[in-house]
View 1 (tube, helix red, strand yellow):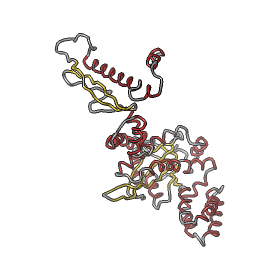
View 2 (cartoon, rainbow, N blue to C red):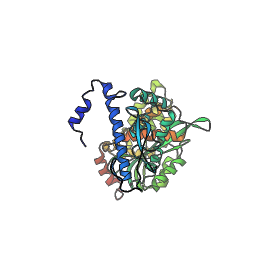
View 3 (spheres, rainbow, N blue to C red):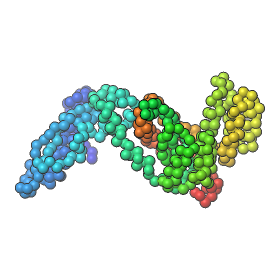
View 4 (cartoon, rainbow, N blue to C red):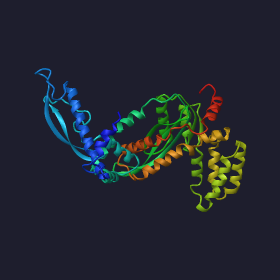
Length: 401
C-alpha cells in the first residue's frame, strides 16, 4: 500500500530538522506508536467480532475493558503504548504479544550486529548510541538464542541426491569447557550442486579433527539424502580419504592444494618461503601429471637437504594429488579450493576473531551459523566456468549425473 503525498505532507509540515523526524518525540516515534496502537485496536475488534463503539451482538458477548500500558523498545527508541483489554481476559495480541517488550525490528538489528562478530558490549553501545535503546546482555543472548531452533531445522534438512563437488574443512575455535579453555574444531561441508551454486551442507563441532569424526559426518550427509559425490576436496588429514571411500566408494578424492602448500611451508624460514612456494607452484600448476612429477623431482634435488619432509609429504599423498591433473585449466579453477572453502573460511575468521573465547559449543555454533547466513547471501551466481565443468563431469562420470 502506498501512502498518499497529501498525508506525507501533512505529517512533515512541522518537521524542520533531523531530530523532528528521528529524535525523542519525533514524528517517526509518534507515528509508529500510533500505528501499533491502531493495529492492536483492530486485533481486538476481530477477536470480539464487532468494532469499537458498535452495539454488541448480544448481552453475553465479550466486551472491551479499558487499557493497560507497556513500554516497548524499537529502532526509534523506547515508547509507552496502550494495550486494549477484553473483559474475559482471553485476548492475545499478535503484534505485541504478552510478555513481549520490543518490536521485531530490534531483534533483527541485534541478530545482524551479532552475526558480524560484534561483542555483547559493542552491541549494547551501538544500539544506545544510534537508537537510544538500552538492552541487557541477557536480552541479547535470548534474542540470538532464538535462532537455535532454526539451526536444528537447517542442520537436519534433506539434501540433494548428487553433488558434483564437496569441499570439506574445519576451523579451530577456543571454547570454555568444564572450567578450561580448549581448542575445538568446527567442521564444514560445502557442496556445489548441479546448477553450480554453492550450498553449505552442514556444520559440526568436536574437540579435535579426526578421520573417525569425519566418517560420522559423511554418514549423516548420506542419511540426509546424498547418494553420490563426484569429487571430494579435502585437507591432508590421515585416514580422511579412507573415510570418504567407505561411505561414498565411487567418489574421487582430491587433496586441497592450499593445505598441501600451507603445511609444506610451515617450518620454512621467512627468507626462503617465497622461493619454496614458487617451486611448489611449478608442481601443482603443471600441465600434466608427468610434468608435475618431474617438477617434484627437481624440487627434491633443490630442497631435500634443508627440508626433506616436504617432498616426502607430497610423494606420500601423490595418489590424491594427481586427480587434479586430469582436468583442463578451466576445470581446475572450479575444484581449486581457494575459490570456495578458503574464501568462506577467510570471512568466518574475521567474525570469529572478535569472540576470542566462546562460553559454550552452542555459542560458537550460533555465531558461525549467523555469519554463514550472511555470507551465503552473496552466493547468487554459479561458480565461474561451471558449464564446461559440468559437460566434462557428464563425460567423466557417465551415468551418475
